[in-house]
Every structure is written in structure tokens, then in C-alpha cells.
Length: 77
Image (cartoon, rainbow, N blue to C red; front, side, top):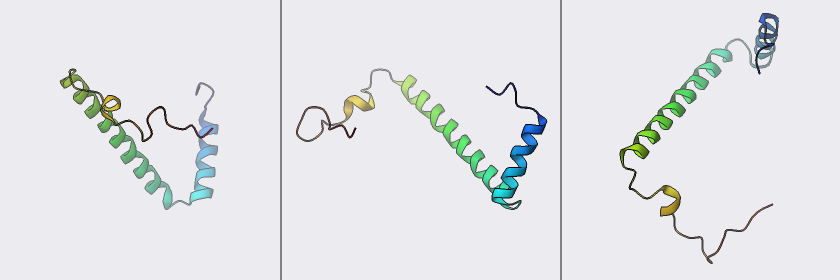
């Protein structure tokens, strides 16, 4: 997917980002993206530990109550 991404392409993306967001906002955006990725990885690893710790527990989808009126929920599309 990113095989054709070269240095000029990266510089162009960086220049557009600086024009759109400004040089002061780029570190803030990168920091918040890094925090989001770390939190996502932490939640994924916690979910893996919880699932593998006790395989005899009821899954989250099985423990939910049936929607009111019984049957399947209404589809929007």
C-alpha cells in the first residue's frame, strides 16, 4: 500500500499539514494521536488477558438482555 511513498511525497504531506494546522498545532496533534494509539493497544491487550484468563465465562454478547419487544432489533437501512 505504501510502496510508492517516497521522500518528496512525505514532504508534500508535511507541507500541507503545516499549512492547514499551523506549526504550533502539529506537535499537539501528534501527541494526541500517540496517546490514542497507546490507549487502544492497552485496551486490546487487557481484553486479550481477560478473555484468555477465564474461557468459561459468558461472553459480553450473550450476557446482554434481549431488546424490548423481543425478536431482532429494527434495522435503520
